[in-house]
Structures are given as C-alpha cells and as structure tokens.
Image 1: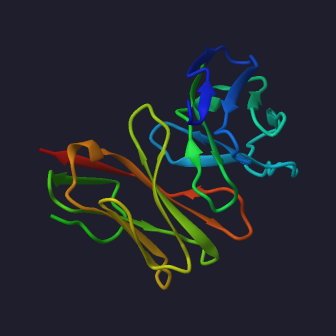
Image 2: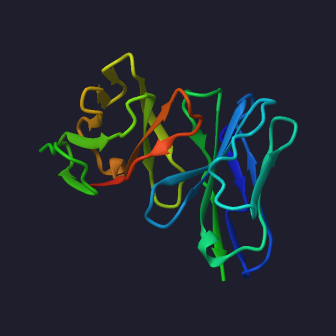
Length: 113
Length: 112
C-alpha cells in the first residue's frame, strides 16, 4: 500500500516483557515520527528521525524506550521491561520533512497486563 | 447551526449545517498548523494545513482560519455530513522544534 504501515496492530504482553513495534513509512519520506496516544487523549511526541541526522529523542519518557531507523526507511520502537502505564496506542507518521504534512499509520494498540 | 468560541470537547450538529471547531495554541513562535480527523480505531488523517504567513486557506468543504494576534485556529466544515463524525485535532510546530504539538481533540457528532 501507499500509506504508513504499522505492525502488529494489537499487542498484549505481560508486565516486565520487552516489546518491539514496527513502522514502514511512505516510500521516499525522509522524516519519521513516533507518537503515543493514551485512551481519549491527544498525541504525545516520542522521537523523530530526519534523514541521516541524529534523532530527536526529547519525547521519550524513560530510558526503557528506544527506537532505531534502518537504512532511512523502516523503524522499530522498543520498550523494555514494560509497565502498565505503557499501555497506549503507538502511532507512527512520516513526511517529506519538517513542516510538511505528517501522514499517520493506524497504530499499534499495546496492552500491558 | 454554527458554534464558535472557546475550545469545546464535543460539538453536535445537524447534517447539512456548517461546523466550526476551535483551537487555541500557546507558542507565538509556532509557524505551521495542521488539522487532523481521527476515526475510532484509526490513525489521524490529514485534513488541511496552514503556515503562519497566511490567515486563511481553503480546501474541499473545509477552511482553516489563523489568527496570530490571539493565537487562535479554527476549522470550518461546510455542509457537514454524517461521515464527518470523528475526533478533530489541531497541531502546531515551531521553528525550533521538530514534532507536532497536538491540542485537545473535539468530538464532532453529526446527526441526520
């Protein structure tokens, strides 16, 4: 498809486990973003990748969260030692660059038991 | 009918009416603004954007107005349809930042 693809769409795991979330951006988009959306809330920025520049990690809530982007395309968000407060929808977006429309995937709904 | 004023968490309109959704932003340095529509279980869908050198921009059935003096943004939807029912978010970014800062959403309900 032509849009942003995220997998899995749903993930249920036990507290303390590690999880990996995947994002396939729109082909050719140089910028990639991760956001988190808690139930009934707005989106909270996590991390931003732009080309080969160092990522902006200023939104990551703790050192349990990390992300990488391989080959300027696919990105994975990793949450280590998950906690119940990590339960949320994790959304990925991509764009041609800063101040260009970001296009979102449908997210991964993460539930920590 | 229309609804104007401060941010409302919910807005209910009749099919065919015009809708106005309002948003206030906090950072006077913000130079890019964008509206998204989010349906249940889906990611935000881009509607329209505007840069700070403009005060109005029109799309198909939608108009965004930007008032930098009072730091206010609005989305107007003409001839609202049941398919417009969703949560609408405004977002901003500024020169020094890289991410969008999202406002509180407004749930639009359209009855036929």
